[in-house]
Amino acid sequence: MPFRADLHTHSTCSDGSYTPQDLVELAKAKGLSALSITDHDTVEAYHQLDITQGIQIIPGVEFSTAWKDKSVHILGYGIDPASPLLLAFCAKHQERRKNRNSAILKLLSSHGMAISDKELYTDYKGTIGRPHIADLMVKKGYVADHKKAFQKYLGDGKCCFIPGAQFSLEETLSVIKTAGGLSVLAHPHLYHGVRFVKEVLQQGLQGIECDYACFPASKNAPWHKLAEQLFLLKTAGSDFHGEKKPGIPLGASCMDEKTFSTLIQSL
Ligand code: AMP
Ligand code: ZN
Ligand code: FE
Ligand code: FE
Image (tube, rainbow, N blue to C red; front, side, top):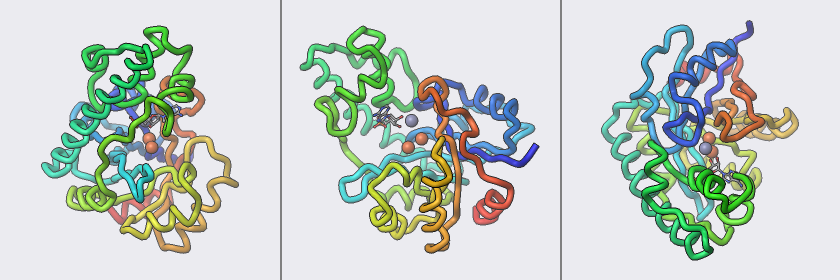
């Protein structure tokens, strides 16, 4: 079995459908050599994980941030999940999300789709955001499916979308560094072109997620080129969410042994 490392996945601690332990078991069953659980704005998975024998686990997190008013996701690898500064920053994110979720629910209610804060927080634990709201919209029969919820109401710029408070890229990078981690730009494919990505990378990132989800080699190639130009680390990950994002299997994008060792040596 060739070496494969998937360094971008989500568990039930954010918007994935597998518990951290089940995710580790699935990764082992799929023959992965290394895995990182990179939940949105939380490292709770690392406090829940029990048994990690048989696979190398790289502690990780995916922070939402903004650069020039545009949403950007930063992966932190090799962080200490017990770092007090990191935990305080995650708590700040939870507070930010609580306020934002309430505001989104108010907007939905004004569009005839009532969902109470209680309904949102009774059903879910960990980081709660738009995907959980979308689930409830489906459950309550307001929309046919998750996709419609985003397309019509929750997607960026739609009528019930609000960005909410944001934490700066600078603060995010500094927290990751203090917690002993490296900062990697997640899914450059999804942003605003090479110029924008280059500008973000030059703010002090150490790496870039060149291979992402199910994107073909042709779509990953520009990011490999940019990583080489800027002497940055390359990473890869599926952004696996289980049934919450159907069609993207665990291990859809993986690192080989050489790229992985380069990253590990830098941690
Ligand atoms: P939030 O962190 O609350 O802003 O939610 C962002 C998450 O919502 C992303 O990680 C995606 O999983 C999901 N998401 C964002 N846009 C869409 C979309 N258009 N369709 C489906 N899911 C989306
Ligand atoms: Zn997600
Ligand atoms: Fe992301
Ligand atoms: Fe992600």
